[in-house]
Image (cartoon, rainbow, N blue to C red; front, side, top):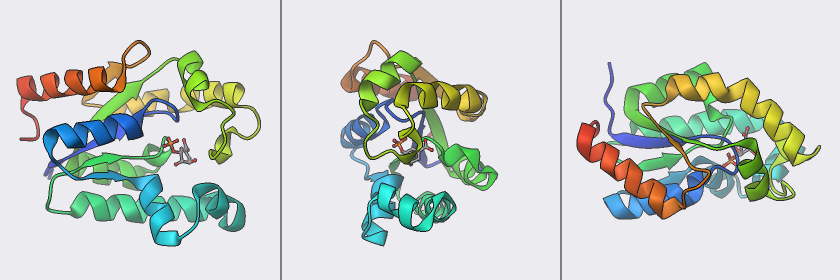
Length: 176
Ligand code: S3P
């Protein structure tokens, strides 16, 4: 059964999920939640620290818990998830049940520009460009499968992306 009251933004690191998500939430007057921020807030540690001290599996466990808590909330919200959240079938299931999913799609060159040195993103430590290109090819199919809406954000600013999302929502009225 689906009960889609939230909007979940998915996509790679550097796609602009956080900035776009905040703006979209402002425009809808809905609360905004970023799973990475919420994990950091609850743990009192940064994502790279959790990753280094406790490992990726511990981070993913927290991601699953925070995402599930956000999705079961009865109040509609905009939720931006980390780029790897949709790799876990349990996360995909909870997102599908409770949210409309919007994919912010961008070329590797755009992502590489936006993440810079990759600081604060453990998966990019070995060199952002090659890591991004590998992750994009590993994850592209999953993002595409999950998304009810997808936007190519390479040549759009976050406010333009938000306008496009709102236009699409008005047409389809899928969550309101
Ligand atoms: C990750 C993306 C990051 C963060 C973590 C892992 C990934 O979030 O969750 O470093 O697996 O793609 P952003 O996509 O918000 O950068």
